[in-house]
Amino acid sequence: MKVKKIDNIDYEIECKKGEENLLRKAEQLLNSNLNNNPHLKTLSQSKKFLMLSLVLAADLSSSKKQMKDEEENFKKVLNELSELEEIIGVKSD
Image 1 (tube, rainbow, N blue to C red):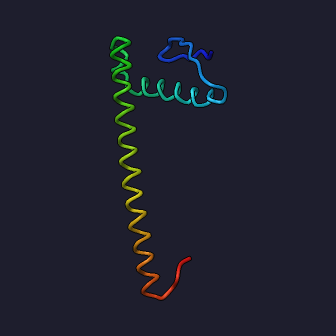
Image 2 (cartoon, one colour):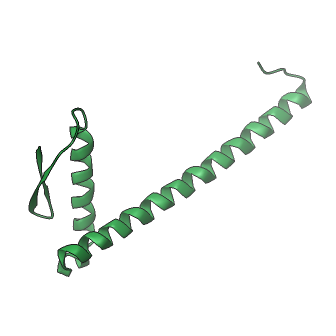
């Protein structure tokens, strides 16, 4: 059982062995988001954590879209590289 302080409240949280670092990073992320969004401090705990969940979900969605866009750009570069290799007669393994 690990005690984590989120929004100045101690929570007892269970995690598997080896997940302590992940839990610590999650604690830091939550507290950072709470500090970066001071308007959340005036909300009740349940609304505060609901809003925090929505903020984190939006960040995750944005990151996934960015990764998808970067993957598409990478595929385009690979296709262009293959076309250039064909033009100059280079065979790739």
